[in-house]
Image (cartoon, rainbow, N blue to C red; front, side, top):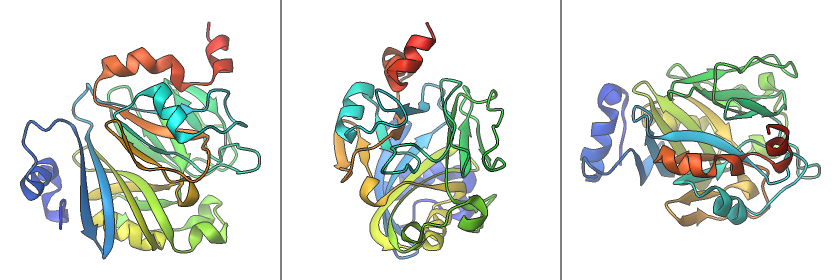
Length: 267
């Protein structure tokens, strides 16, 4: 089933509705199944042109160095969508990439390619120099993971240039990734089928994704949608990407997205 195609990028949202029978008033966030490049996918599509939508991150209650059950993090943040974020060291529970929440650098990791979103839902992908602090002040939310899967419509996966050398990550695995179309639609895809990163990138490109990065998956893979956990991680996590359909809901829980030590420091 094709939801997006390269020829329908400008009308991708309409294509989703037509292909899947989604009512036009279904709202800015939808969940559906697709199969592209022989990869069965669960897809979350988010219309970032709707400024009531909020995409941001969440860290554990006590911050980097601590992990927490996925279900507990979701209960605290109450998002429309929650998925696993960037990789972390399972022994130290420290994420490998930078995390900016609410315009504030909450963790410096120094690796990978960053998904960056402004307060007005404008998206950029940035690959900073490794282990060098980056000026993220233009962005409300940043999460650095990787490797990069698609760059300006071109599939290309070069993990070692971004510092990724773990053979388990580079082998065939269940996958989770995030990207954006040229029409400013955020697309999150998940598959339990073990695939190489290059095959995942091909599947996302077939969905009309223009830029994309890989996210943490495997035993860490988690997906929550509208009150239901679709995929439960097999380990505790350190960070999430969360999406809110209503900014009022986000504002109610905003403080809970950052660790307690940072909340206290901001007062």
